[in-house]
Length: 264
Image (cartoon, rainbow, N blue to C red; front, top):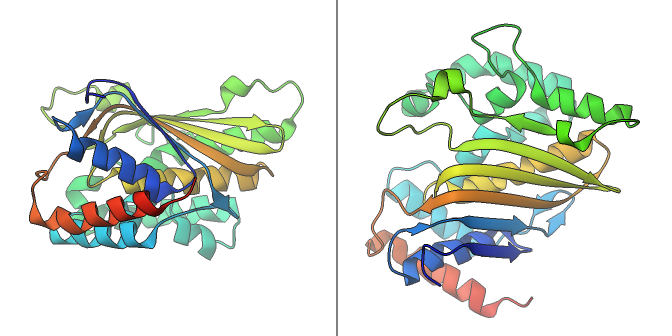
């Protein structure tokens, strides 16, 4: 399969899913997959299965290359620790997050990355420059709780804002995630996410983790069981690092070892 062909990855372990996409680029010509579809199942009380060796080796590699760790990237999509501190009360979570947001944007090493906004911010305070801001997640949860006569097409939330994001900059670090949707099916919930582009090395693993955490949060509030996360990527790119970088060697080794020894 060439890098210009669609790649579908269906795994019950988040680490294995990321490893397959990563090694596909490593082992094939070019530095892109277009399109890439990653579908992840395998949750224990909403927590995705992971391989500790893959995650730790990638985290170390990210730090060695001056990038954010996996947990930090995941938090931009869903602030899991804040959710726990809010004692799993969503209204308190929303309030705490918005109160913390100015400090998050002012953190020195994140200031440039966060200047255009954060993903969870746009999910719960979309169009904040033109009040009233829109809490898209609260709308979805509230409408679902009505149950009767609710169309599933309303269970979607936008990240991309044409008024702020249709700019002619040569590179725009935010937002890469454009859109999410939620599909209740019986007693389970499936989540879909769309990326126009995605940085496979320094963002994708954290993206997958953050999306899974967001899906579990929504399932919790909708009194469903989170069962699957589908991530559609227009162009997945191995940016910011060369395939032959010495720092990638432990990551490659951990991925190959995990995939060779896994049982389906």
